[in-house]
Structure formats: C-alpha cells, structure tokens
Length: 560
Figure 1 (cartoon, rainbow, N blue to C red):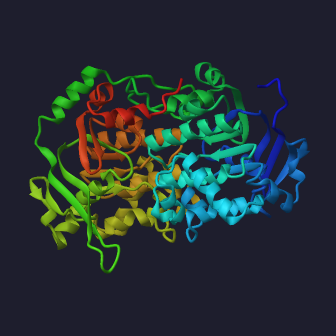
Figure 2: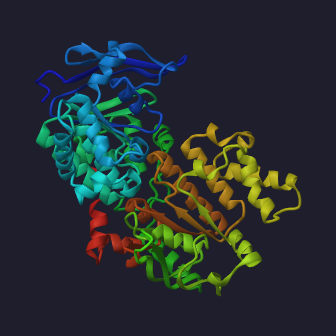
Figure 3: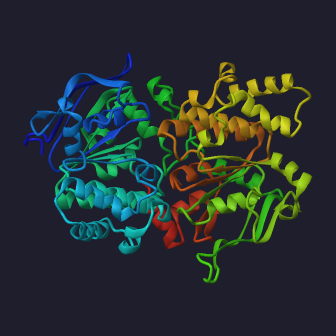
C-alpha cells in the first residue's frame, strides 16, 4: 500500500485559534484503499485537523499558521471558498459525530441526499431519487421508501447515521472522514456501522480517516493508526504494533483506561497514572467479590420492583384507533443496599423508562415499586417531595442538566435549600466546598459557570449536585457514555469511591456492557421492555443464556 504515492499528505500542519496554537506541526499520509484511524481525547486536535482538510475551520477566529495539506498534487490550504465547495462532498466527504444536528430537521431525509447529488452531478430529479433509494439499500436502511419520506426526528439514531453515510458516499468520494460516527450509538448499532463502513470501503476502494477516542474501536476497523495528544502526533503505526507494543505512555494509558472484560481492577488507570507511572494493578479477587455479595444479599432489599408496566398510548389521526406500546413489560427484581445493579440493553429497550418510573418522573401504568417497605407509586404531595431527597439521578448530559445562568456552587446549594438541609446558607456553602473537593474540583470553582468547565468536570458537578442531598439510591442514566475513555475512568473511580464512603446504592444504566460489567454486582439485560436475563455480572458475561445477551457481548470492541 505504501509503495504507491499517498492520496493525501498532511505536512507540518499548525493551526492557531487567536494567538494560541492548538495543532503543532503534525504530519501524516493517507494512502489509496486504506482506513487510517486517528485516536485521542477531546482537545487532542483530531477533529480540528480534519476540519482543516475540508476548509471548515471557523472563520476569523482560526487560521493555518504553517504547513500544507496536499490532495491531487495541490496544496488545498490555498483553495478559495468556491474551490472548497466543489471539493466537499464530491472528492472528500465527512460523516459528523451527531447526525441529528448535522441533518436539516425541516427537510425529508431523501431530499437532503438528493440535494448533494444535484449540487455535484448532472442527474435529473428522477434519476437522483432512484440513486438515493439505491444508496439507502446499500447502507442497509430498513424500508427505504419510508426513510426517504421521513424527517430526521422520525427515525432512530442508527438510521440517522446511515442517512449521513449515504449522503457522504453519494458522489463516490476519494476520501471519507468519519468523525466519531458511533460515539452516541448502542454497542450493537456501533458494530453494524463499523461493519458497514468496512464493506463500503472494500467495494468502493475509497480511503477513510476514522476519528475516535476509543482505541479498541480503532482496532476493529483501521489498517493503521496515529495517536494524538495535545495537538501533536505522539505515535503512528500498524494497528497490531500500536496495541501490542505501544511506545508512548499516552497510548499505553488509552489502552489501560478502558475496563478490561477478563479482570476487575480495584481502581481504573487514568491518563495521569500512566504518564506519572503510578498505575495500580490491584485486582478484586473472586473470593473478595463472593464475600462482599454474601454480606449484601443477607439483608432485606432496599427496593423491590413487582410486575411493573409502563404503557404509552399514541393516536396518529382524528379517526384512527389509539395504539398502545409497552415500554416496560412485567418487570420484577430486587435491589439491595450498597449494591450496583447494571441495567443494559439497546436504545428503546425500556431501561431509561424503568429508571424514570423508579424516580417517579414518569408514573408506572401498573405494578408496585416498594422502597424501604412502602409502595412509592401511591405517594403524592409532601411525601413524594421527601422521597426525591432519597432517590436521585445523575444525567447523561451534565451541560443540559445545569442552568447556564447560575454559578455551579449555587446550583449545588439549590437542592439543599429546597429540602431545608442545614441551618443557613453559610453552612450550606461550607458543605458545597467540601463536596467540590470530594469530587475532584476546588473551592475556586464555586463561582464559575457551567460553560467554563470541560465535559468531565461538568459531570463531576452533576455528581456533586446529586450527592449534596445524601441520597440512598442513585440512578446513573448513561452518565459516562459521552465522556472520553480516560475521563470515563476518572468518573467511574469517583463513583466507586463515593459508594464506599457514603454507602450509596446505584442503578447503573448504560448501553456499554464493558463499563457496566466493571461497575455492577448484578446485571439486568432488557430487551423490548422485558427482562431478558438477570444474574451476577461476571456470570452473565462468561455464560450468557440468551442469544440477545450474546449479541450485546459480541458487539463489544475487544482490541487486539
């Protein structure tokens, strides 16, 4: 492959935002018929450097300070906006991370792909429609005629991503840049998208730059990989060499930060641990885990769910009969004090609906939720407000769950005031400062606003706000799924530390089975509103009884 000239060359590229350099003299080559993986955390520069290839850097605030980007023997950094317009979509295309914000919500999906074809080719509208339907078939969309006519909000996340892929490959580009195309997707959908991209690449011989923060995922798709850290390329090589013989400490840290499936470390290594050579390798033995479980399950349950159901009724028209949909279907289980119950399944399986029913945010249609011996489905008014203090939630998106106009210190104090904890605001502020320290922040963060923090820091603020009420039970709803691997490791370590220190009980909801297996005592697998499997987390992973559970496990990127 590398005996032929590269199709794209990045040569000593540097990019600045204002006076600050964010990309520092990076160089790499992309060859014909190759998948190149670029891996690194948020802020490493992987997306910024790729946006530069398409001339999509933000105007006025950013500029290329040195270096070249050579495509078709031309330095495209010298291109005019019109030249870039002709290049984008036709010769170099991009799949963005978030398809919902990349697709036009006011246009039907089929029309959005037709627009690309009409922009770059001379096909008629009839020919374009036939081509789009063929593309939708090619990217394995179900019921292509329905998707063609559907608006983005009417199809699932995985289907939206397939529409984006169809749009990107519509003009048969030479190069496809896939920027975190699977981050927010279920592990099974992620697996499908990766297989689809590999199939399309084999069929079309196009070159792909696949950007992600997950090294294990890179191993599933790429031929070569380069690792970026703080705007620099710190390592580059064939996938097997990167995995089996990583040279840079940062690469070693990325590999070590993801929870291993075959063992359970007491503390997950973070990037800083690897860079400082302070990785702890202490494991939780089977005997330790067994003794812990004997103690846990010898007490009465903290929470018992009995035959719980949640049915939604939809009516599509004036004269049509109502349709019912069971999001949670006859679910029963017990949760014990100090336990972490892992709740997994694909999007739409009912896991978040079940969490919302336990939190009394969405009332169950039937069944009982017994908390400390009382059926909380029958609570209202003051009794329900009191319960809110005991059962809390950590949301998936901490930025959306924090008020952007309130400093974070006040946001953490707010629930204390509502529930009349402590005697004065002076006492409350002292408690908040202590909590900030506990979650790895500092007193200086009290008066800052949410936008001044990174994603990982905002998640810590969300955790601080949750534990401010000293709850008994915490529902973690996809609370680490949007975080970088190493930040994820920090937050998981923090959750385990807080659980030990405060005696919390967790319901840990996620589509990432590797993370759930690391965190959970028991694992509950949901499928189409029902419990598919419920058992010890290690036992389910080692010997899954159901085909659906096996499918989830097989879809986890394993690395090399």
